[in-house]
Length: 263
Image 1 (tube, rainbow, N blue to C red):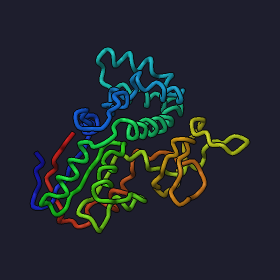
Image 2 (image 1 turned 135 degrees about the horizontal axis):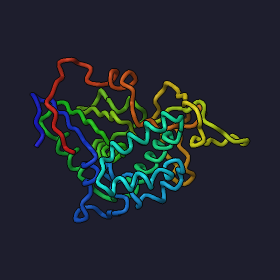
Image 3 (image 1 turned 90 degrees about the horizontal axis):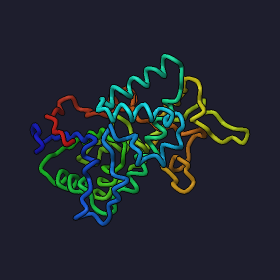
Image 4 (image 1 turned 90 degrees about the vertical axis):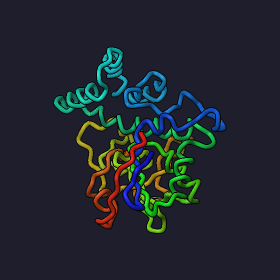
């Protein structure tokens, strides 16, 4: 059960919270193949339909899956692959955020129809006696955004909207989000001007501005609502402290709370 100091509460949401967010007994529909994976299952065969669009990743799947089958630690295996790429100046890891964005956005849209455990959490917490609530979400998906929007009739319209002054809640995603992006300024293009981020073979150059984006699932295009600077919107799945946390984390230094983990 969450613990807090005074009337301030911080809730940390890890991968397990999304993994177990739907109940077939209460949700309208649950599609099991889109169940949010835990870390070691992100590259599982059930996601091959998405993985096959990222050849730099699929080329490492044999090694990755064999190690996992031998009960090796996922984080250690993947870290070794990334370190190898750095040593040998291989840029396939730039495809990983592209894959994760597509995967977790499809999971958000396709896993469950109807109510989730996030809807229950949001209602109970925001109707509680706590004066201030911080949601600290370590997941990339948008289940919590949807629950907050449904309960509070709230629109996440830009990055600043995650820290509204007019609500009792604040919302941080330290690992980034599928709907956050920066312009990849040196994104490769073809003769027609189409972007091909997977072809990048140099250190990426990103714009400083962090943007909130939408996804047109029919065309596959990502775009900034209301328009924005031209360029490829590369997923921002790790947020630099100087651009988000230091600016937006509880602005009053006396706001401290004990952390309740629900992961």
